[in-house]
Image (tube, rainbow, N blue to C red; front, side, top):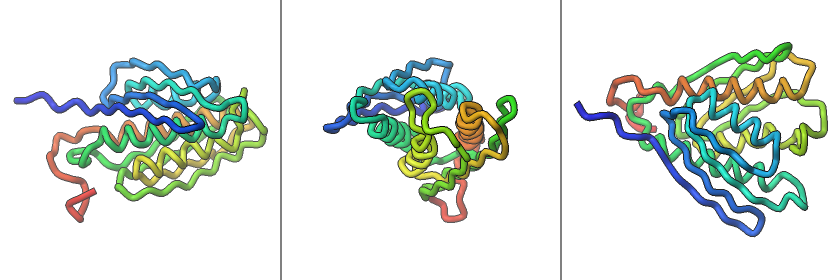
Length: 198
């Protein structure tokens, strides 16, 4: 019996605002190396990769002298495109995933459909302006951009929590756990769709 193909992708994105180089392996071994210049973004992307079971190497250099938006957005663009490419035709995957993730007093819920149709509904209820040097408005934007570029439906809600650090991190952990389920190989060779294509 042949070993299953390695689900891996590499990508570079260079604009006048950012340079991003990254690689993603869906069936990872815990190899994570993330450096974006935005500490809390590194923290969230690390949580996403760890709990999804991905290997992720991502290095970004952006125009942080302006603000964090371009860097956060372009990292999410690249990560979404890597996920889309690594999934290929999505044959033999579970497709759907859902999870709850608590972090102390915070509780987040995420649901994923690797449908090939991009959609994002993100409700985190963050109240602070910033978490470290990451603008709070960019936390849901990263998740929404990831969903758009990966061509998946993503719903994330933070159900409760007083601490915005905990709320944001729980949201990324719930998304990671849902993704881990959705990308899992089922042992079937079929495309999980009544249409026969995703």
